[in-house]
Amino acid sequence: MPKQLPDPDLYLRESSDFILNSHLGRCALHSQGMPGFAVFLRDLVEIIHRLVQSCHLPEFTDHGLSHLGSLVGRISEWTCVSYGSQESRPLCDLLDPSTSEGEGAAVLLMATLFHDMGMLSQRPDDLNPNNMNDLPQGPEDVPAWVRRTHVPRLEGLLNRLLRGSCHNTVLQHPLFRSALRVAQAHTQWPWQWDSSMSELEQSLAAVLAMVDLLDEDSNRCDTRTLLHHRQGNLENFGHWIRHSLTHDRIVIQNGVIRVNMVRPPGTNGQLSSVFAAIRNQIRLSLLYCEPLGYLQVGQIETRFCPPEGLPEEES
Image 1 (cartoon, rainbow, N blue to C red):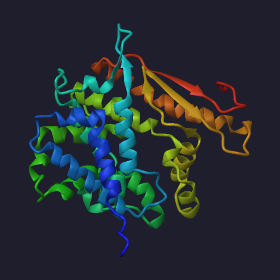
Image 2 (image 1 turned 90 degrees about the horizontal axis):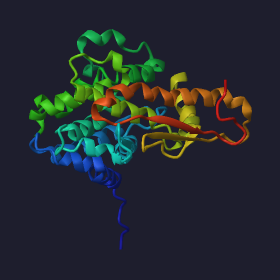
Image 3 (image 1 turned 180 degrees about the horizontal axis):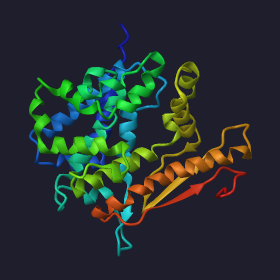
């Protein structure tokens, strides 16, 4: 009897189940604002999975379903203590369609799935023609170009993938347009955001930007890939190294960001400046706290647990 072949879509189904069954996913699926929303989400996850399979830039850290699942899980596990209260509550409860924020969960889930799709595609024709001057000058420029243009290419990429499909009408839906604005804001600081964004959109953009900055654990670092693909530029190497110096998932529990750092074997206190840089990287997420105030998330603080032999803080 012939052996059964492995299922190439098993990871797709597992990722889809995880995302849609998460706290954020279940809140989003209560949305009544977009017809066929559940089918659209399932098809969107499959589109992202196919993009990952056709992506040929292995020197990048993960931007596919593993990264997206990590962000969805981090949003779902985020608990906060609202101002004037000692009671902890999930962030997703503040986004539930039954609350005054209406479709916040649906917009945030779509934006999270959208935000890095440009990192999985290298099509210059997805750029607005006015931005074509940013094309790379040679093969060594491709990774930098992909990273630099992954947000400007997002709208063109989604239009190309969805136009002519059963989800063609989604492209002009207000919730889709709102999610696109939130996704496009994730690489900007709050003072750079488009003034046309609503307060809810700004708060959702802050949530997405924060959890994206916190996805720093070593699950995104594949040392073997790094060693076999040395053509990456300094920015690529910086991402790999940074991810290798933290372990455990960095989540926000009761308003606290707890970061456990790990020192690679054979290194010593000379890495103090590196760990100081990691602390600064994580603290950058606090710059998004002000727009979070719209959701009454409450105060957020960071706590760092350094590896053995290093002090709590360095000058």
